[in-house]
Length: 563
Image 1 (cartoon, one colour):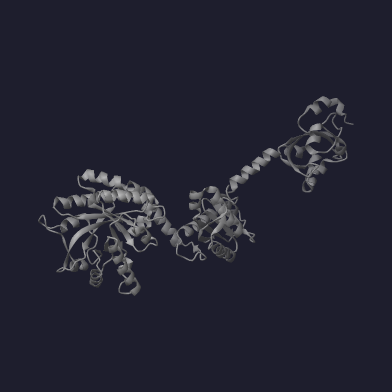
Image 2: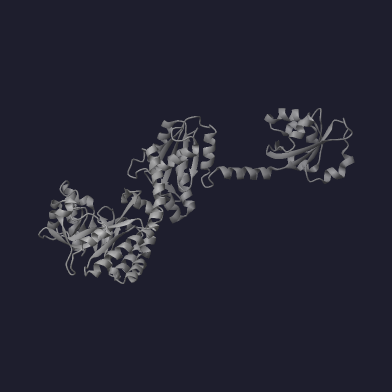
């Protein structure tokens, strides 16, 4: 029999749990104080048990086989096992064993290392590596790995649910508030759904993968209905808007990573005015549109740097009766771009310029060309204004007065030779950044116009305190004056309102003589459009100048219309 007294000092002094068991019966013979403390059993308890009694039921057959086979014990020496304490709690342990002498006595000493804290930390790190830390949902990489492993089979769809407005909540009230809002949405959507894989792509996108397409579309409708009302969180309510995209495997890609990207692209490119309950489904055309956008973004940076963006100038004239011509008052500077000989419309490349942060660089190029035109006109004694469109970006508006002064000093002319046009989208709720810049511009004598007037929803509330002197009626009004009586009434009312506030009115998009006559009748101050003149290059502007100094430039309507 094993006599622990022979090893008493060594065994009791060990801080690691130890016990001795009989190999044939697997019954405990002895356990030290550290084992008694860790497992909660007394020595008498241990001596009534086998080593199988501290194992989960599913592990017992394998343990019994290993315990009687020395080769298998050696092969599993570094393995982490699950043991059970007397109170039922689990312990993660590594076990090292050695057969006692004399050989054949049938006794084995086991030394136990408790690695529960380490394995718990490891599991926590593994969970963090596979999940979004804020929401607890799978991160995109782990979601893609599980899908590629076939967890949802050979056909599935992914919905990318973008929570528009969540980023703004985070910026205004902190990330913890935005997280609470996101969790409220996730909790509601996950209720009653099983079999789906859920992920989160920061900062605002819920990813849901499902093998059942119809079920996924029902989820989109559920999300749309839920987000029609503000989301309650942190004792307040937050309005979140849904933009959803769908993609399919294997139709849209051979790997789950591609399917996730396609769903996100469909969501990003989804038209804002579309029905939220009708998700945007990825198509090859959407993919090509995205690839073209990326190519254009790269080319735009080079084109602006190398000044390949051309600046054209469209005339703006006084709205007066005359003998077939109208005296030129000013030009609007418009950017034009050709890539490999093919024109790229401003409606396509201007949003890209703004999204990739090239607005200041493009504006400087346009202002450079505009000052060159003005300088040339002044050299010929022609007093003509050039107006420049300025993007509604806070940093651009803040730097605008200094930029104008720098160009003015460089060309030796006053800054009031340039006019500024800002769209209504600049009139945001927090107006401090543009009000200060506009006030400085007006102090410098710069004319400030509100472009596309009438298309916004809050312009009238700003007119009484906006430092502007011109409004430009959007072309959509002008095109409707003979089609829609209500539009004509609104257009006439806006002209009267502007005049009542001491503002001049420019009509954009004037394309025929009937429109011109209507605008003259209703007191519009200036006209712009294809009837007056199409945008022309700098060289064409020079060719249009009068031969002798002191003459005014006259635009002939019929000649321009025929061009």
